[in-house]
Length: 319
Length: 306
Image (cartoon, rainbow over all chains, first blue to last red; front, side, top):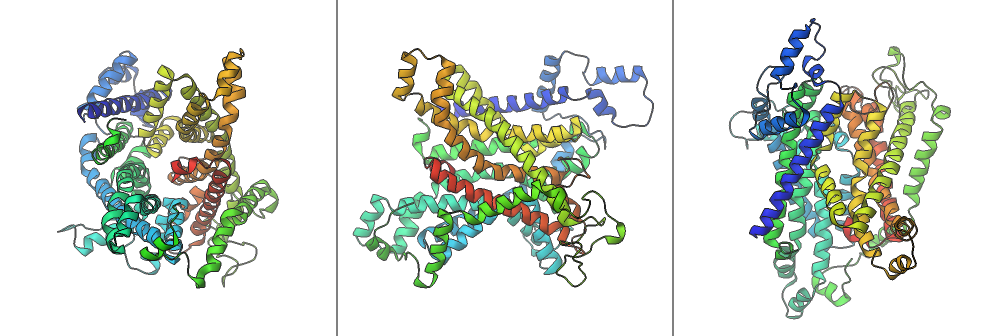
């Protein structure tokens, strides 16, 4: 296990280095970084000021040196100051990351609970109405763009039916699990979790079908174990391995979606910050900070999934 | 798909299908075997995209503010002049969707072709040569997958200004990834086939072995991956346009139409609903056709996809 961990950690390290390198190279392929800092400011800037700024930002050093300093600072969570607000990027992210994580966690719970239960139902009641409902659920989930399902959810459930408030978190006071706080989250969770739920449902269905066909289930049946016990105790526990482990990776993949969902539902997470404050204001340090936040979350989820998989299925460790 | 015996099904209480819905089941089977509906939808899409300038009765880029938010033709206040109504600045929704189909198709096709070529080539190299080349290529794929695509796209828009070229670059960057791993594993199998060894013994050059003996063996797989991934590419293009990172306005795209219409949702639903429905139908049809092609051309991929 230790060797496996070391190997995985090493490859994650490579991934992070590679990702930072890609971002760094991108910034140097673009316009002069100093222009990014000056933005479209209307004020005349003198040559001396630009030179001073260049020295202050470390842009007068060689490229490898700049990269080294940059990565080192990021590793210490020092991502500089936001240009637009002159606040520490670190602080801005710290304020907003909670919203993004809550959104992701809720979507994950939705995806796993719905995906697994619909998957089991579709497998056990194969080729009945339940199976088709499950498949249609999966088909819709995988073929609708999230930005559109989000807008449609607002139109139907907030504007027309009025069941949920449309967008924004309102004033979140008191316990998070109070209905008046929770109701703002339900639609975003469902919309973000749906495609992942569809993937989990398909995985659960196929692994459940495979296991229902295996020798030990047949033996159990021959010995007269009741169908309920076979499904819930013997089959489901083994069938859950693939969907549960891949649910983490799926979640990481759908973090991309979190950006879109936050914008549609006006949730103040890091995705909204990235688009509304960073891109529209050309706030380069802030954008870099949010990008690394996303990379960090993705990589740690992938790592968690690996460990989980290795614990559950020992063959992986020695693979 | 598992094969349960009848006795086991009875024991488990699994019924194949109830008599009442058997025609539903048969219908499903029929459409899985012959994907008529999805292929029709896709053919219509291509037709609409090609004939956009003939079919569109209105200028997709401009409209009169007097004509704003005219509802679709079948509603009470609708006019047959604007089949699917008009948007917030009086532009005809149907005409815009026709031109939007063009953008979606062109972008997806270019991305798929270039990305597929790059991905397939890298996959073959990786599988055939192994060693350090293999290591570097697989690592590159890992790194690429750790990058949050939409965020990187936003970074690029900030750095390079929004343009069609940038969009194409981003889409190619997205498209090559799924090819590498699968093509690599297929290549690993093929390169140990006796005919490849024989070709080498007979004195065929590496280029010849790769092009004449390996490539034909992986091409089916590449075609299948293409059809399976084109749907997600169209969705990615739409998401980029939605975020304002796609083709610059006023060129209509389905994603930007949804983004524009969003602010007027309470008063006018049609500029938002129809482009989204179009994306949904196209992606769904592509997924169906992709599954069908996979089962026909390369059933081995079934495990990878499910």
